Amino acid sequence: MATMESLIGLVNRIQRACTVLGDYGGADNNAFSSLWEALPSVAVVGGQSSGKSSVLESIVGRDFLPRGSGIVTRRPLVLQLHQVEGDAQDYAEFLHMPGRKLTDFALVRKEIQDETDRLTGKTKQISPVPIHLSIYSPKVVNLTLVDLPGLTKVAVEGQQESIVQDIENMVRSYIEKPNCIILAISPANQDIATSDAIKIAREVDPSGERTFGVLTKLDLMDKGTNALDVLEGRSYRLQHPWVGIVNRSQADINRNVDMIFSRRKEREYFATSPEYGHLAHKMGSEYLAKLLSQYLESVIRAQIPSIISLINKTIEELEAEMDRIGRPISMDAGAQLYTILDLCRAFERIFKEHLDGGRAGGDRIYNVFDNQLPAALRKLPFDRHLSLQNVKKVVSEADGYQPHLIAPEQGYRRLIEGALSYFRGPAEASVDAVSNHDFILRSSYFKANFTKRIKLGVYDFNELKRFPTLQAELAAATNEALERFREESKKATLRLVDMESSYLTVEFFRKLPQEVERAGNPPNSDVDRYGEGHFRRIGSNVLSYIGMVSDTLRNTIPKAVVYCQVREAKLALLNRFYVQMGKKEVRFLTLFHSRLQ
Image (tube, rainbow, N blue to C red; front, side, top):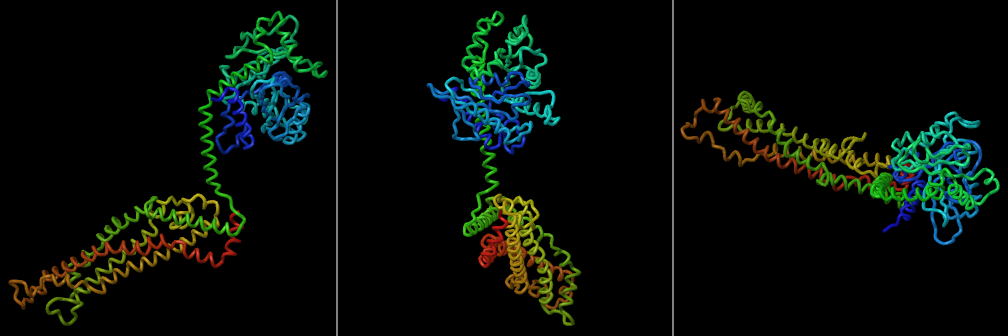
């Protein structure tokens, strides 16, 4: 099972990875969920000259931070402390200088300043991009601190007027995160009510659950005064105990007094102090470091499930983005041709899946055949065409000057041919529906500016979105192919109708009772032969025949459409495109090489 110490180390590694990927605290331009913001950390907050740098150096036990007047810290410094075993020599590593170990901490100070200037220039402006510094020493505890620019009230020469608000916004962007532990640094020789650190900490953490108060410069208070009201929580209560710190004096800094000596001097101060002696075991930089380390470890352990969940979510987001970006494109002409053909095959595969039922689309083809076509056939105006008046008219015109003797064959033929012509409309409509209707189009999630028949694979296949030129070429080729298949399908279905007109089913009429043989009707019954009943029987016979043809076409039209249109689209959608591509391979590849980029 992972130890507490290894948990902090793991978080340190994740923070470094986040920074390399452009995800860092205070940034608001990330396209993905910020993993950095979910990682527990300790943000060091304080006003200028509050003693922030001295506190950090006391915790580390090394003099390594830039010093000076005005704003010294102009970029967040992520300070990761790693406790090593034995008597190993202290050394530091910067994330931007991988593999280089610095044992001279004067060089560490110089590199912090130089790296700040690389990004902000020699100006006094600030940047939210952090500097990562790892320090390895047997004298430190495992801990991660984020040193933020000191809060200020006035812009100095060379700074924009907005610098005051810019620094506050940066600090706030870190400490307002619920997983951020606030280390609020306040000098003891100033009224706690005016502390910049306490003021901003109270705004984002009013209950004080995430705030650790640190009181510096206790040894510089006026004689006869002390900070017991603050340290014992009477002036301003926090959920965690206040910790007092005695900083190195400026004289000690100038003389380069050893940090180990300064720590011992700090312990002696509290142990011998009449005011703070009873709190000595809870004072000092060493105690503060252990307190923060233990608390940070406990917070990390509590947040492990949510961190894992966010990491998994981030992985999914990145994988989705990688899918959207797609695979890299080779510079080799053969590999580019393979990529183009692979995309075309994927396009065809998705097209077939929509037709075959693997995706939405094919079911709507069946709807055309099972519902739309029969409904259109039922609506044909046969009742008007075979009305008594029209039957009389057509039969009389077919007889001419010589009325029919037995059965009006020419009248029958004209009535049947006229009725069969109505089937051309539903036949063509079925073809157009399969070509243009929603079953192949919107069912395939086509939402773009292509012609309807093209929207299918183009917008369902994300990889193809990367290459608009190839997308347009495929759209044009597919549109041309589907149009060609539509015309062939229309010809086939109209031939079915024409075949019914060209040869009537004689057997149907042989089964009809012959009027001249009807029992009880004399052979020369001219009244019955030319009466309304006679013409009604003709109309009824024709309607029966048309019904039989309608049933036949209802079954054969779908066969012709599927064979000439759907089947061909599945088998040869891009055949001509491939042929054309083969004929102009060199020019084709040159064109796409210039436009795939």
